[in-house]
Image 1: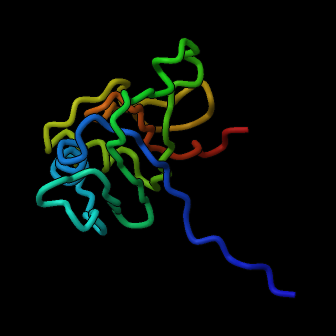
Image 2 (image 1 turned 120 degrees about the horizontal axis):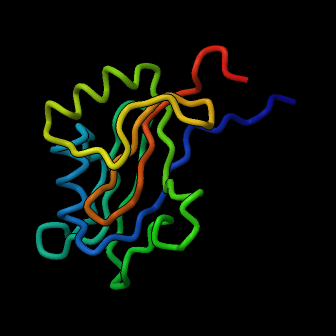
Length: 135
């Protein structure tokens, strides 16, 4: 039997303002808007944004966002890991767009190379990849 393929996984971020969240991902991080709720013009509350194979959903449901970094355990602060083949080039692109990093581009103690940033609601995104020869 052929094993069914999984195409992607997308986190759903609860946000305070879906329009502001979409603007951040589109304008700062270069994501495309692939879906918005039908009433977006008058009641923007849900959208899907994508860049290449990375996808995430944002939704305003009337409650506060609770990023992992606010939960007290700062050893598990990432809300999403985005695998990128060239984190150095992506960091340069984001810097040119005025993005501020919460952790700069570096080799981490986890054997990764990448950087962190926080979105408009405080969700922490890590953009990176495993370092070569890291075991």
